[in-house]
Length: 485
Image (cartoon, rainbow, N blue to C red):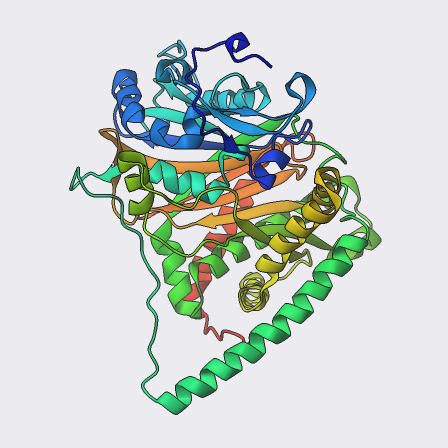
């Protein structure tokens, strides 16, 4: 491939970067995966301001100012990142939108869905921003960003995007996040016993969860035809919707049940999904046998874990501003989560089950094992074997679930105050992707679906929110007892 044949002016240096194994995986034909982030702003977006802001931040990151040469097709050879001179204006798109559009929320959903289906120009760095001068129910205007997964995993990309923002109360300060408080043992002997017990629990849960994971990989796929994606599907008819609820409501339940926000949120999702699936079965089949069948089903979901050590986004901001070094790339592990679809009269039972199951996962090394399994497969058997393993694992699960902690104070994106942030992923085999994002006092539920599998995502979202309302209304009369793990 000749450099001058590419469609944009480029400035190639001798420091061409090699492509990481997982970046190469996500660039394989038929396995293009993208992250999409919707940013609602409290004022009308100024495209020129955003362009200037990106020039001073994002494109200073090596991956965002390089072209990916995959090594496939006409680009046969070693995969690599080639640095280039980026014209930011080509990556910031401002469509002409009718200001008197009848249903702006529906237009936004359709617009993001069309973005999912449109191919990305591989002759340019693999990112773009769409500025929509569109007033919706929760924002005066909207910016929609699309990133190719080869640039980095979703958690890295979200952190990098937040490193481009600043607090509205202090335009020079980076966003702050709520950090869980760590309790310190007062007694040394008690601390040693607790440490030893922790090691025992980790070893036990790791063995159990890894064995269960391997058994799942060797067995057949989930069997519910009413929620599964099509075998081998990646990009199809996607739809992305979001719902904003009060974070305080979730925290109230968290404190009442002595659990975490993640436990409550996953319990809500499981309750809503169970109700949705039962309604689908009731609509198609009404026999007691069919209801018993779904009660006995156990579907599986995928939850991703960040394997990097916790660090402040100041590292990423310094990398863009000063060119300092910072670890980057796709560095995540996953765990397989069983989803109980049995209908429960007590909505809190879903939360208790979620806590018990998530505590086991947190006290295991399954995320490290899953990451190591993928790397070992790649190094021993090659990229095609890794692709087949990925297809088997993720093609045999029902849902991808992520929960991201966002800024605790209001932030601005190059001078535009942010109302909400909603993120999702497309290009994956699952028919359902649920991302939960907290922001100040809001909790944003973002749902990405394959409409051929879930034709009514709004109804599914309604059932998830309804589960929260049911818990909230029952909370004053309920005495909670968190189960021991």
